[in-house]
Length: 578
Image (tube, rainbow, N blue to C red; front, top):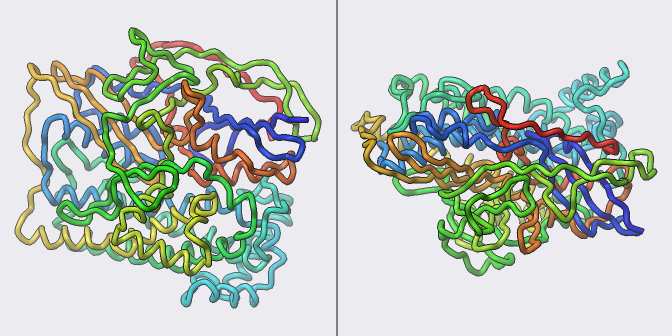
């Protein structure tokens, strides 16, 4: 007998995401549906505005990915106007981008995803002396794992428990059979989890040095940057460099070490060796470190074939709304290119039904319409194919392209973890890929810093001149990679204002619902075939979805252009939340 499991909301992500799955009599997932319950529409706010405002408005898409959308909005307008920004501006934007990536990746692993691997309650039973020795198995210079440090961490968390609360560690599936770390290994990760709170603050300062503040930096402008005095001040440059070194040390000796440990310990856990049934990947060049030199490669890998990488044809990027709560007007096309994209809502709601409840009994629920529209996320496609984007795509494309920066780090990780390259195509591999990406940045990101310092000796230009002719029509785009994968912003300009604006974001690529051919998106495909140990504690679902680092606020947005009511949509609560 099949059962319907609803996980709503998926927590420890940015935004609101609901996952519904069908499991068979053996608790194996046979079908899956990804649904977001917020309305998308921020692009409409940008329409009719001065194009120079686009980046500032777009960065409000999300409170995590602020710089990503800020830069994308600014760069899309620059592309439309044919602006070539000065080299100094290119490098400053890259330093800010480095700060964003490092912040996002470490926060994802520990704050958002780490508790899918680490059993906090088990750490309270650990022997700090044994744990301290254990840490040396994964790095020669472990950080925050001295016996006294670990004992203090254990006491700190233990005090929470004595008070009858676990604070930020509450409401997890502690004791789940797919947790495999020993108490000592759990204590190591817990120590790094707490240390990250300090490191996270330092990375935020890295962004603020050149961005004025974090989140929502303010120093980018169409044509270049405005943080002129900061880049001409040696103390500000040195401050960024020293913080980069400190963060790099944590990433090498805590983050990388913990992911290697997880790879060794979980290498026989079926639920983490699955999670990548769709093996089509698309990634774009990103992380500039010099003139026309980038750490990440552009390309497409199909069916997991690492023997070749295909070029990206931007004309083949389209979005459709067959299973999304939108409609396309005045067209018979199932999918539209972003330059011609529309954001017109068509909400059809939920249906009455039954799902498996937290007490193990079937209960009445409001469920998605499996045969109709069921998400506020659109369905991006490349040449009519669903594609996965994100760090795993970055690493897969990098390996296929024999990228000189990615290949050595990925190869070393596989050697250190004892995993075959095929293991990358999994939940475990997706989690590891994010760490590999961070290490690549740590090992080579300083090249951007050094290039900036060297260029400033003979060139202090930070902004390019330009004009906007109101009698001309322009169109342009930004396309690149951000922490969660390939991002593109597309703009049309007429009469000196924005005529149309569309953002195709990473979590739209990954979380989008079925298309007109019935093809599932990466989230949905990733869950098929996963066996759930305990239907009332679906950790396997949460762990797999978390490995994508969902940012649903990016893929769906609230909308109100001038304070007017644009529509009212009643979202039914789910009475069978797990």
